[in-house]
Length: 222
Ligand SMILES: Cc1cc2nc3c(=O)[nH]c(=O)nc-3n(C[C@H](O)[C@H](O)[C@H](O)COP(=O)(O)O)c2cc1C
Image 1 (spheres, protein in one colour):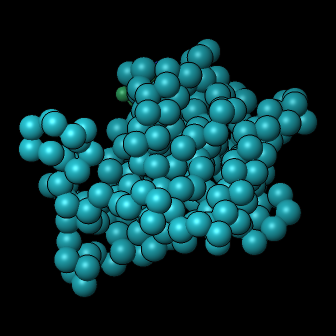
Image 2 (image 1 turned 30 degrees about the vertical axis):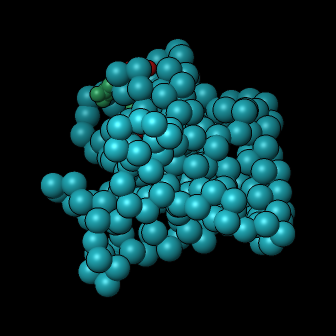
């Protein structure tokens, strides 16, 4: 059985623009379609249900026993999951701040060596494609490399009903989304199987102390 987390990249309960939090529809569609695949379970991670710190204090900045319980529980879920679906609206031509803020709370080693899928949406005609460009480098740095196929949902307020079903062309939409989810599943299964042969942390140990651990030899402070 493979388990996936779907990160819902919006906390926008206000309006305009209306309707608020279209991301709920997109995340529900992903949950429905992923759960319909064989040996697959999926869970939506909703930032509105978490008490994200202000000022910013990520999970890895706490001593292990002191991390707030909701952050500690989510860190365990991220570590246990086989792959991720990252659902983002386009805000100012980039990844939604709600999604980057949520993900920034967790260290890359929790996500590493597992794949992700990029799903973007917007109320306009581009479906969040510009956000997806920013997401590729963000997710690569987290270590959960995004699969090549992506989902973009333009005019998502018309394309999706509140329950996460497509208003029209259901079959074509599901085939379109299914291509990306299929790639996610393939890579997730391959990564999980290979992990039992080769421990990735032995090949590429996690950086645990300072960012300068990434530096090339010869750089200052390397
Ligand atoms: C601050 C802000 C910036 C936005 N920037 C863009 C944008 O660059 N491109 C776009 O297509 N839509 C943009 N929109 C419209 C969003 O696509 C639309 O509001 C969408 O519903 C947001 O997702 P949400 O309802 O899940 O928060 C923006 C909306 C907000 C609130």
